[in-house]
Image (cartoon, rainbow, N blue to C red; front, side):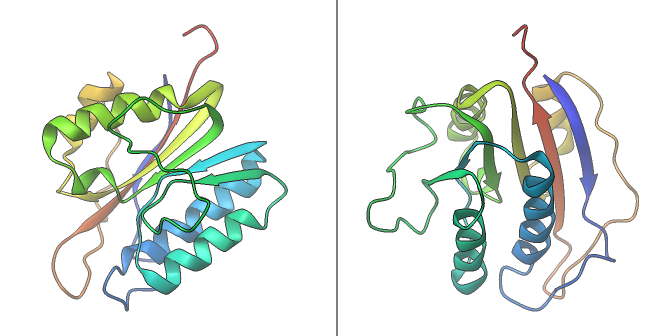
Length: 174
């Protein structure tokens, strides 16, 4: 496992004005990264809030890659995959945005393993987490190294929640 990036999304990131305010930060950053990675197959397991989440799914579906959604919107014809169970297939890129923090500890452990198993060799897993709902210490234990944290944390107008972006790549020898 290689940690490609770990950081708090900064207060310079745009958009802080809806109930799930962080999704627009997360989606914008992830879409830029998806475009730069140019995967062949994406599996989106993210959760989100109405309009912004729908737009994100449409952006993914409109790209030059195959996209499978098993996200919270559960559109007709969409794959039904509970991330606490074994993955039904592998993808070059798996997205899990603001989802794990909604699970209890044992389900979070299962989902972490299953999402990792859903990545093909040399594939990438992109997570975002609400912090402190998911602790840095738990993440460091999962990746086996110290994560670089940035002092400049954001706070939304409803409280002191921060967003962590984490990108992991599966090494071919695993």
